[in-house]
Length: 361
Image (cartoon, rainbow, N blue to C red):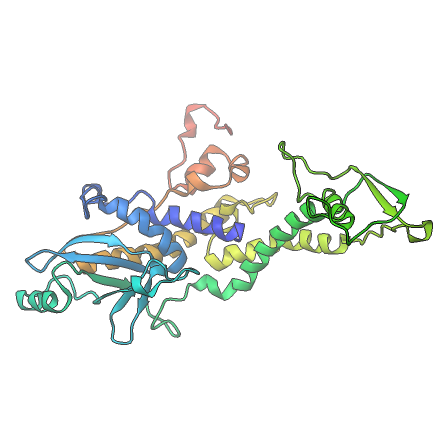
């Protein structure tokens, strides 16, 4: 629910897939009945940006070679103690159904012998494939992958809660334009044909002065006149507002700082998710940040490359990398000259000996 985390995942997904495989011809080869290699990699990229792992369903031909790959959503897989995997589309939901558990063997390797294929069919059935579950094992990450951004989960939650608080401040604020008190009495026992007491009607009236109740046009009852009733003047309601200015100021001051911490946790340069603001960046700083970011992206790309090459070791699944000029915040780009933009993208400066001066467009 963190807007910054979602933006970082989107940026990572774009950069991981980039333009697909370097080998364009290989990218167009069908790897299952619906997808080419590039289409499958595009789908996988979103999962790699979050989970930093690859999970594939592998099917073989009669020759023992891999013939088909499909994505298995990472959250639908659980590893068993005996090295197999349980796949269930209801894992991680509040409607888990054990009867939907399906067990699969772990990936055997690129090629298996006819005897091994026969043994697989005898144990698992002819139509049962394997699960390739690939991630880089590290200390504390030997059984399941733990994304590096998870160390900043408190910052991600804070970023989400800041946005929720701002929304709640708008929708729940009690904002009448004035208060008119009427001496009288509210009955909270006698119910009318609608099952409502006078007190119920009052409560419903009070709610109309927040942003939680809207009419068919989307307008709320904020800034309307509020009418209250009491038995005597001494019992008149007193409206006592509470100032939350300090809280709002604290949130305002922390919002950008927290968002930048979230971006750093994902390894995404803050200016790629719109956090550049009015801060000036020199060409070399932007270029250095993009280069470092692409280095991080390459590590994630190699998860896909390595997984695919485990299935097809004779093929090269190197992925392209994006030209950073396409994705730099427009607020930064507008202050750069044409040659500065070309330098970021890795191009030579334009020939300036022709008497034509380059300017910003």
